[in-house]
Length: 517
Image (tube, rainbow, N blue to C red; front, side, top):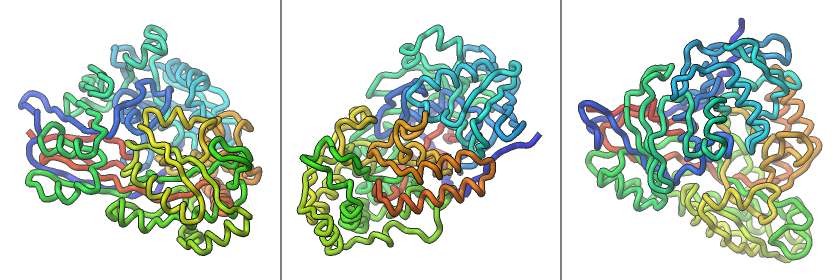
């Protein structure tokens, strides 16, 4: 039997903070975490974004676990074996229990995959052709072609209880989620709190912290105040302007680490775009290059991000499969207003108006960045009207087929450590292959890129996959269907007494934390 774990290069940051946490007692340990926003779902197949994902991974488990440093290890599957080029067998751990006491069976995995194929998250199963239970502890999964990244993909598929979903229904799952994860849901009051308690029979051992409360605090100043007054023990996305203040307070620490989240601008490639009068100028590559050159990422880094950002070199970090060494978007298209104006003139474009859709509570200083981008693009005759909204409205508004949007600011991270999942979702031609192009919001289409993604998804050799994805990267950097802006820094504020390791994927996972008593 051969274990097909892919160890990917990644940066891990670790911190240990010392002393007492608010609310802990000698009998039970408790922790309160301040998030930037509430979860939008408790059904892991209804959509994904960071706050929801954090909840999902407390309540549910995947077959393959993603570690804090983006390597992969056994999860609900204790082992897996490649039987032939396209057939995998996954062996489930013995005795794993759901929160209701029922034992995990292979039929639950089959049910999860069947349901996934009919869900909004069908892209997660794009390279799964068929599956069946061999016995109660063995699942067979077939891919349509040799596919090296299957175990990585399975880290994003969380296993449901067939009996539970059938009992509560799809709508009921949102209020009554139940999995095999380290925590059980106690209460979810939307826009107020999510309360979890440790699951005593968790297969990896009971969590150190018994009670965990997540509080959505969308306002950055309020989030900082909640930390400093003891209402919460940790805050996610500490405001850049509050970093020095918190550092100066006794009993608190500021922890930063490079983020996987790449802030990007999606450009509509359709001839007729929803917010542009007449023919869409962005179909001309010269206009897209002009817009890229008009954006001063150094100014954004200095004036808005307080130095806590890193200009993007490509669409994925250097640690990832598909990254091309020596290729830097900002070196190819440096900030240059005169060149940008020349490109606009050569394209015969005297200026145009469009709307930028952006959030005001999802990314660090997102509303301020949107405003700054509008000012920068105005200098080359691109008049940007802002449509800024809370993330709770944003995702539905920009959803493919993107009937409302011409220009979108969003973020994308790739915790799988492999560019293929991003490229297949964002850049593969829409409506061409099931499970691909499902978030291609700019309607980009290049047959050569599609073919390279197909080749990458049809090899069992990681080296070959990397080579195909690197070729796709080069074409994407030339075509500019999307402008990469910067990687955020993950910034946390924490009270003394909280012990945690900031994860590369930004998940705040209480199971890996502890508090001093």
